[in-house]
Length: 261
Image (cartoon, rainbow, N blue to C red):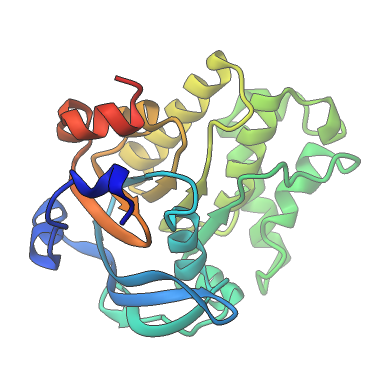
């Protein structure tokens, strides 16, 4: 670790992390080393998150936050270690298998809506790997009934949506597959404050009322930790600090390095 972060002290062990997610562990990473090509970015990483719990990953650029999401979803080379969901090993499944059979959905950080397709067509794209297309229509309809903002624009091209509405559409599109785990990369990036609040309200609703497990990467560390049940601070591909979101917000080292205080 670089000198700037050495003050963070001893890294938490797997048992320490497990105590933050004691009930009904839904997704587990054990001793994972992973990266891209031959470059290893994550080193012997452990992670535990319970069903309907939210975990926020924070840390400097290049620390490996998005690489954790990519590894869970199947976008990295895994050199060693295991990823499990409900006790089943899923380490080497393809992204399509992880979405379809294990209920893991990945919401990209970049603007991934199809601007010339209607809002409804964008939603239906979320179910493109379903065996039965009528199920996609049913789930898309449920989403539209849930979010009036999208329903009002269902037949309009997605390019007419505001930034916040586009982010809502990206999240909603993932819901068409009825996932149990949402991997959310930078939900607030590029959004005005009022839309940031809206996006976190939506994620909160999905966690509280639909019992989704949420793992998010968020550059706005304060907002992410205010939202999440637990947080991991990543430095150089390892977890340097872990705690409840509330505890990390009060932690002086976290405050000095990541919260601007």
